[in-house]
Amino acid sequence: MISGNSTEPGGPALRIENLDKYYGTFHALRRVNLAVERGERIVVCGPSGSGKSTMIRCINRLEQHNGGRIAVLGTELNDDVGNIDEIRREVGMVFQHFNLFPHMTVLENCMLSPMIVRKQPRAQAEATARRYLEKVRIPEQAMKYPGQLSGGQQQRVAIARALCMQPQIMLFDEPTSALDPEMVSEVLDVMVTLASEGMTMICVTHEMGFARRVADRVIFMDSGEIVEEAPPETFFTTPRNERTRQFLSQVLDH
Amino acid sequence: MEMVVVAPPAPGRLEDLRRRFFATPLQAVLSLACLTIMVFLAWKLLNWAVFSAVFTTSGGPEACQAAAGACWSVIAARWRIIFFGLYPYEEQWRSALACVVVVVMTVLSCIPVFWTGRRIALVWGAGTALFYVLMKGGVLGLAHVGEEAWGGLALTLFIFVTTCLVGFPLAICLALLRRSELPWISRTTGLIIDGVRSLPLISILFTFAVVLPFALPQWLQGDKLYRVILGSALFFSAYQAEIVRGGMQGVPTGQEEAAMALGMRYWQRIGRILLPQAMRNALPATINQFVISFKETSLVIIVGFFEILASGNAAYGTGEWRFAYVEVYAFIAFIYFVFVFSLSRYGAFLERRMSISER
Ligand SMILES: Nc1ncnc2c1ncn2[C@@H]1O[C@H](COP(=O)(O)OP(=O)(O)OP(=O)(O)O)[C@@H](O)[C@H]1O
Ligand SMILES: [Mg+2]
Picture (cartoon, chains in turn yellow, brown):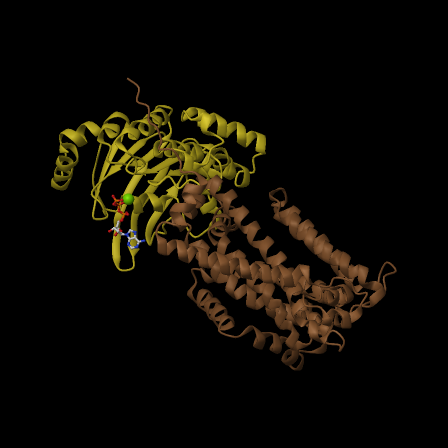
């Protein structure tokens, strides 16, 4: 185990080398390479089925990769359960469909993992949970059940829940694409705040405005490959690849 | 400008009745005919059960037989056999107390305050131990009473409670094994579940009670009662495992993924996320399964146990009360009804409670 490295401030947040992933015989990721520094904000985009979800789900082992290496905060992601546990504690994830626990209140959703995974005392977990609910601007909903909230509110709870574990990296998989248009901005605002506070973020999203505003780098994927990788100004104004240009004209036009 | 919406006035009770049952002349005639039949039947039943019935034992069986109505004296004369079977007469207070223990234990574990692992375990551990000591004796100055002498309601309750106590955790284990990612584990478990479900309960009970002693060494056999309970728990768990599995399938995969992403280990995900939601989904079918296995306890008759139904047979079967079997069975049916009805009301309460929290 290289666990000692994870608290080391200098190392890269994430290093992916020659990553391969197969679903049966289908080659979903083809030799993907990506390095993310601490505090960097990455936006990943690309057409449907291009492997964006697959890639970020490999980072916390929701999917198991078949080739190449992944190192998160200096810890190698392999079959070692201790490493997997350690990485999952340090990496938060927000899903397209929120995935809140419907049988618990909002507050319990936020307190559960800090209490049973990080072994925090109840009072501390509750204080943290209330602080983050405040931060995502829904402190008054703490005692409600997820089913009683709007989509935008649920997604903000999901962000708060992930933050309560005090992760060093946050993964977002299309956090706004299941939302009604009028709720998109309330979630994006929270993400912008998070980015401005220096959180390391990897966001799969089609919100190009968000990418322009906060991304340090935009990554374009197609058919399981990273096709283009550039800072937002370059990416949106002078994309090098033909597929990127096609994709951008589709996304930006409509 | 403010709009005022006025709801149409709700129809009165009488108006509602008229619309439902007397809308057309034909409907009116049919409604009246049904009403007449129902009143007639209700009167007959009431007359038999109450007005012409005999309640005291003073006249003995003869006076009873002469009466036009029900002969409840048989219950008054024989209730001890129905409730306690062949349990020694002077010790029957212990059997009664044991029944109370089971009822209290069940009621306690139905109260949400007791729904933490430790409290439930405490209630059931202490309750079962108390029941066992009371029934079996041999300590604390209580005379020893062997399992072969247990009977009546106490035995029915004991078999039911222990069947659930052993069968329920077993069912959860089977359901979890069945969804294992390793094919040889899930297939084998599936085979066991389907195998047990394809056998009639009677044959399982018979095997465990009668055939097993030939196959097992002496020290492994245990009392026949416990082998029978084991058999019925196995049967219960096979059905309940499928119910639990169905409940698990109703939990979206995103739930477990979210739990994984939050760093929870396998048992934490199962215990905190998957099972609570799966059990909610499975609740109606689970209550149903409890009701079924409560009634199926009567099958232990065939391997020679005097549970409540068999004790009922004994209660009227001794000559003088032979004519009063309807009353005895009605009484036993009433006892079954009390238990099954409370179980299903409790299920309804749980469903209501959960629908409030999930909305
Ligand atoms: N569990 C799976 N089994 C088989 N194939 C899968 C599985 N999950 C994803 N795939 C395939 O892998 C490819 C990449 O899927 P992925 O979900 O990563 O795409 P995506 O870029 O996130 O698309 P979207 O924008 O629609 O979310 C797709 O072709 C998909 O059909
Ligand atoms: Mg996706």
